[in-house]
Image 1 (cartoon, rainbow, N blue to C red):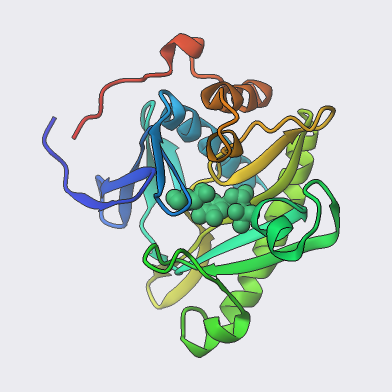
Image 2: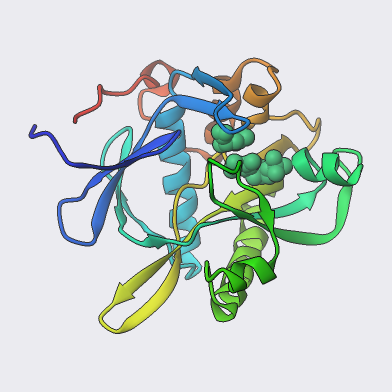
Length: 254
Ligand code: TMP
Ligand code: ASP
């Protein structure tokens, strides 16, 4: 296959030029990083699982009319997406205290929050994604007030829906991170959900035992990272065709 033009390489994904204008191919790597790249490892099969899990969740969200960049899965590690202008914000929605919120405010991990909390972080590897307020976002022009309203309302809808979806398969959605992009259609612009939704950017605990099944297994050296992701995929009913032995997936076509 002809070598495709690489548009961008991130820590866990690569974006290639898509087959038609306005499309990209999103390739899921097995690389895992934490603490802004200070910790790095290859988790065999992670890319295959995240491609599947993100496909599944984006499709379910599409069915309830949440606009997303997902078009279709192409193969084990790649999906076709719509090209957007990424808003440089990481939007974190939290239902239960964990991670940086637990640390920052001294709340015991696992404490249910009085209501869902939405936080914004400025996307900058160089600065380590600092937390920012609406004031910074609008003053520096990263998004307008109207866009932030839309981002907040879409994020809460995604949270409501995913909380229920995961609860149905015995998983608690503790928190997660979303990214949004601007899609231009003629003169019109709308915001759509971009990036991925996977155990790399969600905390998911077993509803009965509170066992962590997500990337905290990697961040905190809890072991069996791939098995945690696989269990999430299994519960969603979407393990890759040939089962766990197929995790490595085909070699990358570049
Ligand atoms: P935090 O507790 O470390 O702030 O993370 C909150 C949620 O956001 C958690 O589900 C993991 C996700 N997340 C990312 O997807 N990317 C990041 O760079 C960070 C720091 C968190
Ligand atoms: N993805 C982020 C990083 O590299 C952090 C994280 O997910 O914890 O560093």
